[in-house]
Amino acid sequence: MGKIKILWADDEIDLLKPHVLFLKEKDYEVTTTNNGGDALELIEEIDFDIIFLDENMPGLSGLETLSKIRANYPNLPVVMITKNEQEQAMEQAIGNSISDYLIKPVNPNQILLCLKKNLDNKRLVSETTAHAYQQEFRTIGMNLSARMKTEEWKDVYKKLVYWELELDKSQRQSMNEVLTMQKREANVAFYKFYEANYIDWLVGKSDDLPTMSHTLLKEKMLPRLAEDRPLFLIVIDNLRYDQWKTIQPVIEELYRVVEDDVYFSILPTATQYSRNAMFAGLVPSEIEKKYPKYWVQESEEGTKNQFESELFGEFLKRFGKDVKYSYSKILNLNAGRKFVEGLPNLMNNKINILVYNFVDMLSHARTEMEVIRELADDEPAYRSLTLSWFKHSPLMDVIQFLARQRANIMITTDHGSVKVDNPVKVVGDRNTNTNLRYKFGKALDYNKKEVFEVKNPQDIFLPRVNVSTSYVFCRENDFFAYPNNYNYFVNYYRNTFQHGGISLEEVMIPFIFLKPK
Image 1: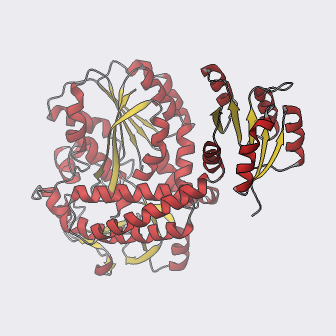
Image 2: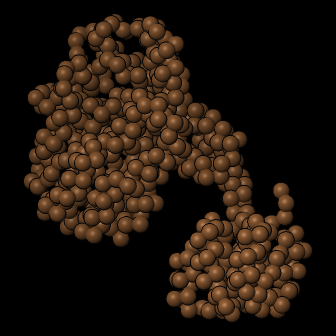
Image 3: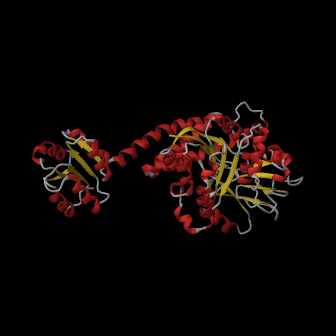
């Protein structure tokens, strides 16, 4: 790589010779001129890495020169150097997408810092991030080998997501591979933790109870109803915690994050179980017993979540909350736009529920459509696609409207998803369900060492379809594959995002409370 080339345009360039010599001693190649016209000609002839531009020059001013540079070289870094400290001048320069703004007189170290920040920033940030994760790696590793409690597991998972996003920015492949290995290690340990504690959590015998699907609204929503503002509960189906952290900066332009937490999904980590449990405030077998007309067995025809509004109404009654609420489910773009149009009519309700299905549909589309597989080839691309959708979706319009109306927002989900890559063989009859991360049936055949096995569904508060029904759940990055047509099946579903089983990504899911700024 050759020397970094700098163009410095200033009508007092002769007075800046000490600075130019300083930069040359630091091995930068500096070209100088005293006017904007010559600067534009030099930029056409030479590939400069950065431009230093004086604001007040005879002929073309600095701002006029900047506008012409931006028209032809929109990505070329330009640093404005000026004696003018007026706010209006700064705003005008920033509006023209300058990279930095320095006030005269400048000293050599200021200039050097400016160059490092604008030209070497990515490398410096990358190296610093990698070094910081290397230090954290040891701490996380020690935690994984210890007997952690629920809150400690939440902290470890948040740290893993944080470093995953930071290392994405640094693009250091070797460190990304180390993090992937550590996430695998964490998922192995988390599976053991979940398996050992799950039944005790459900029956309330544990002194380390996490918030779970069926306790979420009781613990997190009901206490907020005392506030004198409408509350919008936005449930984004299949939203992982890393996806929440990806869209968080966009939301924070309008809202202040008051609570950023994760809660634990029940099993199966699938909509017809976890989301019904959320709205009912009950585990599935209790829903079936208490409200049989609102529970649809998985083997039955029809939508399994068609009574969410009714279940939520019963939930409010049980806790003596006589409040007005609405329930809406968005399955496509037109429905989203129509919901936005009707928002003013909802502002007198105490609670408004919005279930948004895009992320779940994206997950399924990635499995079934080659073009979506290419767009979301890996985890960073999957997050990026989620962010792109969110920025341009009716859901963003909803949040902007609610910010203007000063409404409170809760954002959560019913389950997450995990990228699967390891097939586990299972054999079942024709009535066995099709989900890749959990199976239930009368005569399932599998390796007990590879699954979380539940012989009696009532042990984990699931409805018993018949006397001999049992459940098995995949762990970590596994997925179930039938021996028939095995190779085709494995190749088709490997590296797809699935849900229903036990992994950090599926089980530990976001709960966010927002207040308008």
